[in-house]
Length: 142
Image (cartoon, rainbow, N blue to C red; front, top):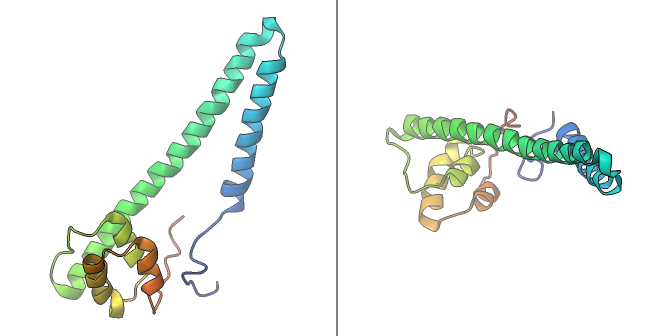
């Protein structure tokens, strides 16, 4: 695996971000076309297919959102522990969860200074990631 950097740290999974998205889009379009072109005696079943397709889209969204929220909580706990180990003090509550998530890529050498900068300058997650010199890979986040 090549070294992770700001430029290549984002992951796009073809199966999830590509095939699943296109499949759900095709399902919704097909269900709506079926509903529009159906005979009156099949209107009920056609409407159920449209409903099921929308439920699947909403379900897919929330499944992804819930998993990311759980990962964000784990990252937050890890980074708070790392800061405590390095400094002996708790991490400031002034940092947002997005800032803490951006800080996870910083090496221990620059982590503390970057935490201070992020708090004082209100750096965004993206700005924090761009400020990192020695990138610490996070290959477990999906």
